[in-house]
Image (cartoon, rainbow, N blue to C red):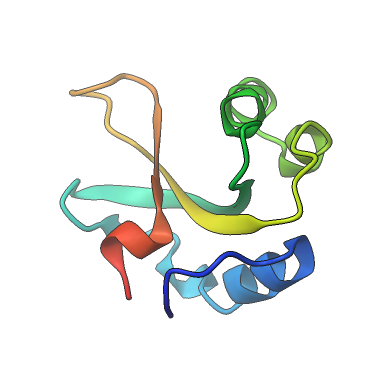
Length: 95
């Protein structure tokens, strides 16, 4: 997969084909991937991710995105380093 932006439906479709990665360790972090979600690539990303962290719900967070383009985000946890959810773009680890 290339580092592309998708519309929401395309991102969800791509994520559905990657579900096998959930539970595997995120490269460079050695921490299991907890979820894979679409994320806006516009200026609303911070608001989106904060709502997702609070609610754990993509549908609730996506209402704040107001974006035409999305990318794929891996969600994992590194308790020893951060004690919080950590996220990284799929394209950062995989190509």
